[in-house]
Length: 530
Image (tube, rainbow, N blue to C red; front, top):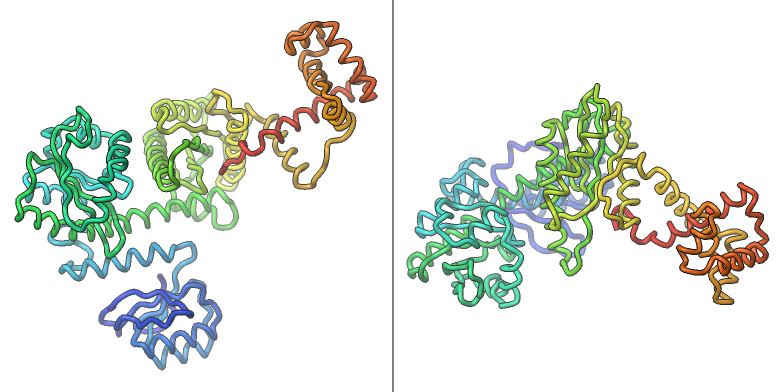
């Protein structure tokens, strides 16, 4: 946020954060910081400054750029309210989370932003070790999707299931299903007390020790859970200690989430700005330290049936993190982010390589091979961009490759734009025809109508003949008919469609329309973000 008007030193404390709603006159906390979403006009800002000041608010935040006129200046000067501008691209939700976690930290005696309860703010591993020492049991801290955020020492003392969870940083899918189907997750998230889980109820050989779990909450929001592997139920004293620890863990999780989300959002915004091009691309590339030739690699995940929207989003984020780490290992100057459901990577390319596409292709193939079925997807490799301005075109190329790979449904999972140039062009032309509502023309339109009316396969016959370069025997074999039958069908389609198949221009036009028909038939599967 940037200071627009007012004296911030005059504000000694913030009593709470409130979101302005013109249709709800709820009372504001004392010395509140009010977030004014969608308030833009100078007159509206001036009126709101006066309104919130009357309710005891100390700060008003509006979206930058802020419209300031004499009326706004007078209102700020008269009321003492500090007017701040939230930078463009920053999230109101993110700001709310960050502010509330900061204020919550102050309630437990945090000095500045350095510690929460004597532990460095956001250091969940230190928190896990502290709770482990208190309970004398190995502990994990997990998010709402049961992904491991942190774990304590002594995990090797537990069973194979815990080891698998820690190494994979995710509770195994089979255990998640068992917990969900058995109603244990619902019980955990409903209760404010620890829940004891008997391994016999899970019926898995690799789960030996019981677990004690407690939901971690911030108000009415469930942030995740904390799990301890125990040998017997906790004593009343240790159970209460576990409950108290969960409150402190919530503060650390808020701080951890706010910091991680802000960093991820910033990187996502920078990567998106670079890939979109325009006047802000050069500055964004400079902040990402992209200073040399590079290529864009677009990773689109294959949709998995049966996954909820929340689980699918969690899978995408996990895949994006793994992809970013993989590219960084290949080149420290790489950048990656999840933008619009696609993970885009920008990989610097050194000069002098005989085959400049060899390395990005190898990196992409190695990544998909390592992730296996859990991260199934396709990767499109754009053209080599000589400078920042050309990265936008490289991104468009990569998107086109992804679309072709998805539409073909083949075993090939990685390609460059040069490999699929023709198929990509056909998809684009199909889009243009659909947008302009251009129907197929003769002779294909007439043959299609004839087939529909008479139950014939003249279009299929023509397609097979063109694909076989006029070899009747080969085309007949493809359709599994006798060559004489095929010759009769060919004669009929020439008569009905009034086709001169000896004319190369006629053959090209027919083949072109048939290819466009194929592209339109698989359009729903070919979208990059679909």
